[in-house]
Image 1 (cartoon, rainbow, N blue to C red):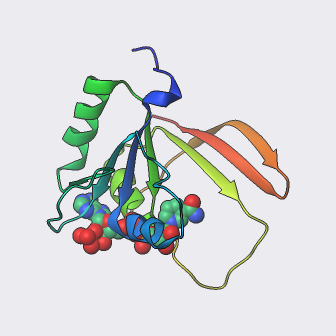
Image 2 (cartoon, helix red, strand yellow):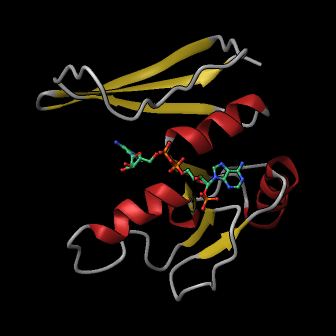
Length: 138
Ligand SMILES: NC(=O)c1ccc[n+]([C@@H]2O[C@H](COP(=O)([O-])OP(=O)(O)OC[C@H]3O[C@@H](n4cnc5c(N)ncnc54)[C@H](OP(=O)(O)O)[C@@H]3O)[C@@H](O)[C@H]2O)c1
């Protein structure tokens, strides 16, 4: 299937990432006017900007792909990403490296039995930041 333009991007994130976004002093929700899904195992009422979901990941993602095309952006965080990795649902990684080394914090990659081989598709520099773009080898 041909990829649709990025304006058709569908956004997924974990509940803790959503909570972090909502605590920032932003003028408006950063993914306004996009389809945005927040994964949680609790029940919340949808808002004007997001739908809360607690579905099995693979059928949910396949439904999105079939309905709207294949541009799905998983914002994070690490816990939700880990679930996606375990299910083999990540096609590409776009990772920005910041010039900071931390001794503690919230890891992007959690422990697990996964082993992914990646293929580098490109890099971009934004001042002191480097964006790494990898495709997952299937
Ligand atoms: N630097 C960046 O670009 C970037 C990007 C994204 C996030 N972050 C940071 O990462 C931190 C959050 O990451 P995190 O790893 O702690 O949490 P997270 O992945 O954002 O959210 C974890 C929560 O998502 C829900 N969840 C996770 N897996 C699920 C599944 N398979 N099915 C249903 N619900 C699921 C659960 O919510 P419930 O507890 O409600 O059930 C879980 O507690 C934040 O501080 C955020 O700012 C940084």
